[in-house]
Length: 437
Image (cartoon, rainbow, N blue to C red; front, side, top):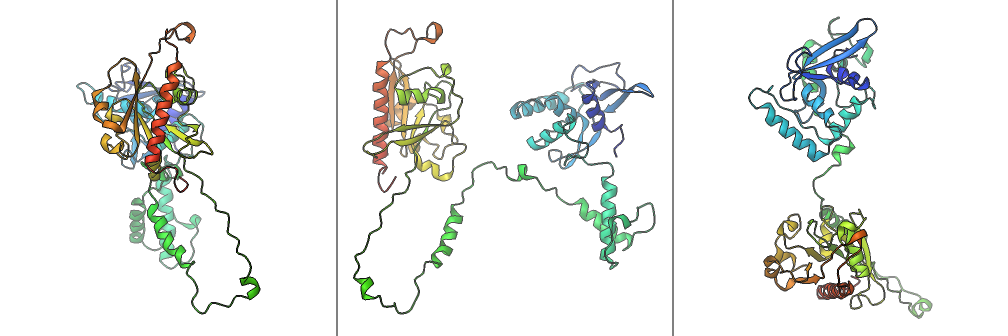
């Protein structure tokens, strides 16, 4: 077991007793530090029934038993552990920004020096859970016990005994390094210890299944088709004769089945200056009425709407998917993008398959929506006929969210129909409605 002077256990105990440690510039609490960048020690105040109040000062550069990949698979120092706990409720972006700011402060004149390691999400979650007491002292996969080295050596002794031909050796039979000589020889033990020291830590399912971009498995599909064709090869040899009674029967043609049509995708602009975003796009395209996105209560990151396009499918409406980011797109999703709403800002296309506007709007219709009477941006005009420009009557809000504009919203429906007509024409020109698409 780890002793109570262990920095991790001291920090865990101070959190449990609601007596947070004090960052200081010396080994006592008489000179508290004004910031963590100038602190050199962390003073823990504990209460004991036998000894009363105790003050334990631990240097912030002290390595702990938390092994982090951010520190090069080495022990994390106490400053990084304490800083992680202070930002337990911060988001990933805020935590990274705070780490960079503290590292700059540590290098300034008069600061304590050193660096703070930025933990990845899995390590941060594990450390915060362990420090808050939601996990026992032995449940963290990143925290090594003080007896870990001794245990590894005992396992090495057991393996060394088996390698020497002594048969099965139980863990309890492995001799302590301070006791009698290990079977198999000291050289074999040292070699095995070196092997164990170079072992690489394997991640859990949270780290192994985490990726940075969608993976294209189309090559696996093509590889599998070569095996599936082998099962459909016609057998060689003479064809057996068909009885006359069966041959004269009228043939029954199977009922043709059309595959399920793919759902077209409409990409919206994520810009805050866009008049149409996810909160208000459904009321606009479905109901034909414009409302400001700030007044809507929808927080969904994906929407579905139905629209009947007679020239594509006159019998049933198509189901459209509306999103404002292609982060979760699979490679084949881009062939289903039929329209892209834009504000004229090219940064919107940074994560697209086609980052150049000329190439993008040759595959999908561009739609720019602005206020009536305002000039259309030159960038939109330069993109040519691949972008539809539409203008709405300005929305003037009044008390209680009721519009006080003298012009009613009846012309919104006309703009909506123009947009749908352009989308339908673009889809028809690109082959939608043929062969089940």
